[in-house]
Image (cartoon, rainbow, N blue to C red):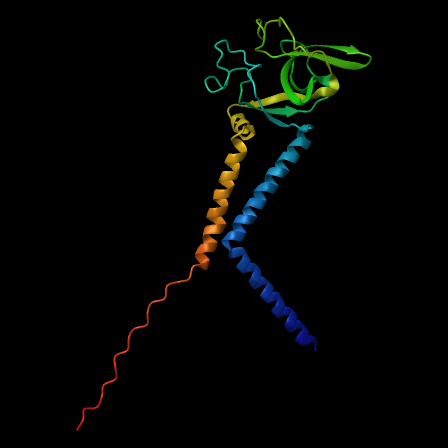
Length: 237
């Protein structure tokens, strides 16, 4: 009896392995698995970066030229991507910090990211001009390097109209920037970004799943059977 049970379990195990091998060789399954792995890797990278940099906004795209100090007005970043400034389309890396540890010694002060006091959903990337403390809370004044008549590193002739703002609005400081890459992020956020992704995803699904499925269901053409020659008849005597 025990040998029969063992034989049945072994047969079921072999059938399961055969089914798994067949599934693994299936092209549609491999494509779906690849997409799932890519999503998991991207999600892991995003949440891992948030933990490592101690901020919910570790990577951002610069959306305006307010930090650009180039005098010719070409602040898109294409013509002078490595100048010491921030351009529209730059990708910036943001690190969460204790507001008390921020460098406020202008013009070498930190460039920080913070929630705009008049619109908390909007993030601002400007340089610290000064700070002051009121009842144990630190307040910051900021200004874009390219704003106003007197541009960085000269002493600013103005500060942001919503300054000063409290320390709890600070997201972090800019520790690195990558030219050009932010244009892709800005495109994705534009009115054309989501439709473009939907179209590309639809094309991928059609190429990888729909077309192979239709081909597999198409009946194969069978060649007509060869005609048989009539059997010879015996000549009459």
